[in-house]
Image 1 (tube, rainbow, N blue to C red):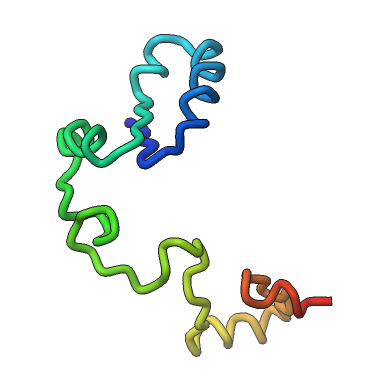
Image 2: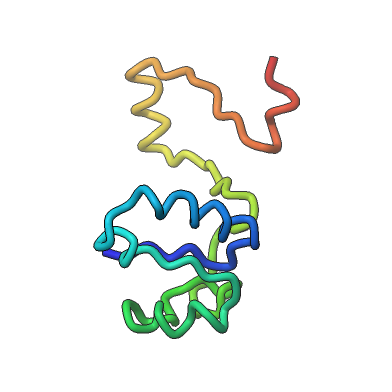
Length: 103
């Protein structure tokens, strides 16, 4: 497997320099740090079809949630609601929208 860190801000380059000094060569070779689409599209295309990426990264996949919030919609279906009531799950989901209202 490989790890692609794409569209990384410049500060990541300095951080990566420090971190990679602790890693062995085979591990370092599996990690790619790329700051622009021009630099990551070629190496990533060798591993996967770029059409599988979300549209905001140049692919064809339409996301059902805002990729910038990292909060997928939480709409429990009837089956999950039934499981929650049977097991007595009463946890509160805290998202960026509800964080201010949770006491």
